[in-house]
Length: 238
Image (cartoon, rainbow, N blue to C red; front, side):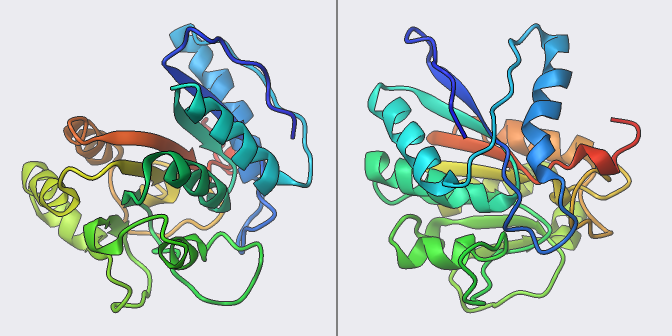
């Protein structure tokens, strides 16, 4: 993939990562960046598309390192969730070990030995020293997971039953003042609100609750963010 030049006067740079070769469910996340950009034209944001290339990890890591070294902050659109791993590598090189705030239906902490798999990033990232599980939170989980990986897991039932303010307060307490990388997998939402994803799971968050949670975390030291697993082909309403 060839990343486009950026405005050197910008504080944040939007990066599209059209990659879904690591998905274990329905493919289509590679179309997410273009779809997000197209819809975002309603907000008068400039839109663009990135061509495909197979050395995604190296190119994305180099692109992110260049932006971060120039003092930019990144909001990246995937693409399947595997794209978060090279982004974490670049951010950790610049900011050091980070806390992870992770919205998802899945913990993505599986150790299956696959080189490309969108369910393994947060097994790999702590082992590489990119994130500190003891200061990291996974929100909206509703699939099986390893309870001994160190992450605080707030499953969807907890998040839906508790007040938004209570959840926000717990996340802030766990994260503390560490630099934070926030990753938002669209399948953290219930399929009734976001059917356009490769591995939908019933019983998720409402769009209203997710928006309130993300807004409530604005005071954290967020150094990077991404939105991933948007597969517009499965969402007929867009």
